[in-house]
Image (cartoon, rainbow, N blue to C red):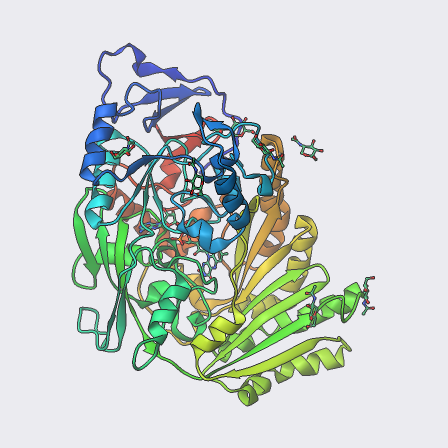
Length: 591
Ligand SMILES: Cc1cc2nc3c(=O)[nH]c(=O)nc-3n(C[C@H](O)[C@H](O)[C@H](O)COP(=O)(O)OP(=O)(O)OC[C@H]3O[C@@H](n4cnc5c(N)ncnc54)[C@H](O)[C@@H]3O)c2cc1C
Ligand SMILES: *[C@@H]1O[C@H](CO)[C@@H](O)[C@H](O)[C@H]1NC(C)=O
Ligand SMILES: *[C@@H]1O[C@H](CO)[C@@H](O)[C@H](O)[C@H]1NC(C)=O
Ligand SMILES: *[C@@H]1O[C@H](CO)[C@@H](O)[C@H](O)[C@H]1NC(C)=O
Ligand SMILES: *[C@@H]1O[C@H](CO)[C@@H](O)[C@H](O)[C@H]1NC(C)=O
Ligand SMILES: *[C@@H]1O[C@H](CO)[C@@H](O)[C@H](O)[C@H]1NC(C)=O
Ligand SMILES: *[C@@H]1O[C@H](CO)[C@@H](O)[C@H](O)[C@H]1NC(C)=O
Ligand SMILES: *[C@@H]1O[C@H](CO)[C@@H](O)[C@H](O)[C@H]1NC(C)=O
């Protein structure tokens, strides 16, 4: 398998084999690039790009919601594609909101991570790197879907006209999968229906509470509604308040503060309403389309179907305890003392998991910010007892620190108090590693050494999670990588690039991420894995790293449910047949 690089220097001259034929079929757009043969999606300027009248018909089908994409930053520029766009008031609004997650997630196409837009059309606040505002890798057109018929119309159009389809919910994807050059985007973020069910009676055997969640709902929004129920209920969501719930999150697996206790979000799924690649509305659960149901639970985003809604388990709310723990320059500037402190904290990963806990932390050179330790169904006395081995070790090692404990009447109050929105708008490449309990048991010190090497190489930090979805969850047969059942510590690695990074600098950033930032983590955790939602696009042997023994079945199911490749997301099942060539632009199937 050849890992494909978005920025590999593919010879840009494109020779159209079909240029001589009179009426090329939409699904045949064959070209040769760098001596390789491809069958590509249709792009503006290609003979097979749909005519104006076809687009007009689609526009009528979706109640006139089809829009040509104009990047949000265009209001800060004189013009976009020859249309004058400058508007000082609107530009001030963009400048004010550009780094805020909620604003960004509510837009039609704007991405949280500008790397995947080719850093195009940035508002002044984010750097003004391009003299002119261009579309970059943003979609060509977008439909803000309001009904499931709108989603079907988008899928049918993309399939019939061989146009690249992008599904966009919140634009959170670290790996650029909710944007794409020359594509038609369908935005599912307006699907905000939520319906709580006191006692589930559908197939699968679950008799507890459940909730049917629309495709556009975000984590905190869902938890807030759950809190308004009588009695209050808890749901496995992400730690990040603005991450979507029923889009990429659940299809990739979905960890979060309650995942040690109950399992991953995908483990909670009872039934999906979807539109498949053939444009048919389908239900997928234990009884109907069970193979699709299996694949949707962890098999990868935008791969098997477009989700309209998912029904998941709910759980009774419980009192919870939290703690904030810090070691930074306030406490010590001694590097070795600092790392003794981090070692004391991280070596206990299995211990936290064995107590049903989740921990979120940010680690930079000289600064460890654990916010928070989450003790579901605990009070402070119990949490202190669980953390005693940590405190004892810090004292033995003479490491200074601060720790603050807090009791909460329920998990939701803890969540609102201790978890916060993160930023948007960075030019960043993400990677990561899931370290298993086995790895911690065999090589806890080696894992800490690897984390230290990794942040030294990236000159940045990691976003860390102690999470063990195998602890309390009943074992569920789904597409989630089985290594998650032995999970203990999951780290996101980050390589931050300058806003004006050239293609060569981006390629070097990618190399650094794979070979120097992620490699020590891979080497230190031979029983670990990687996570498709928060991973490295150039993860070596990604099929195995993201899905382990489930990959062969997923690969077959992709061929069954989407033989034409209507859905595409990099490093998801079946995507090795495809390549984005010509400097990150054309999506083509390898011939
Ligand atoms: C700040 C931050 C915090 C995060 N925290 C967590 C966390 O706590 N736990 C965790 O597990 N992950 C977390 N993630 C990762 C998150 O799971 C992924 O970014 C995920 O892809 C987000 O899904 P989305 O639908 O919100 O985003 P989008 O970027 O809109 O979509 C992501 C992918 O899902 C596809 N997709 C979206 N909607 C649909 C749909 N209706 N049908 C089919 N495909 C669809 C898109 O095409 C794309 O491939 C975090 C990410 C960020 C940026
Ligand atoms: C779709 O129709 C609306 C309303 O007539 C129009 O404003 C919009 O520009 C059309 N979209 C495209 C892509 O032509
Ligand atoms: C950013 O670009 C716009 C449009 O070219 C220009 O008007 C503005 O002055 C620039 N801002 C900065 C800070 O360079
Ligand atoms: C400029 O932007 C503001 C704020 O979005 C809007 O109210 C106004 O109508 C815009 N002006 C023009 C001329 O489009
Ligand atoms: C992407 O950015 C590079 C470097 O700025 C530029 O050469 C290239 O034309 C851009 N591609 C697109 C599609 O915008
Ligand atoms: C360092 O820790 C102290 C004590 O917990 C905290 O108040 C401070 O904000 C931290 N500093 C940084 C830069 O994180
Ligand atoms: C660490 O260095 C910073 C900057 O010089 C200083 O402000 C801080 O007081 C030092 N911390 C300790 C514990 O000495
Ligand atoms: C990016 O900007 C920096 C600082 O302004 C400059 O030194 C560098 O040459 C620029 N790089 C590119 C590729 O333009």
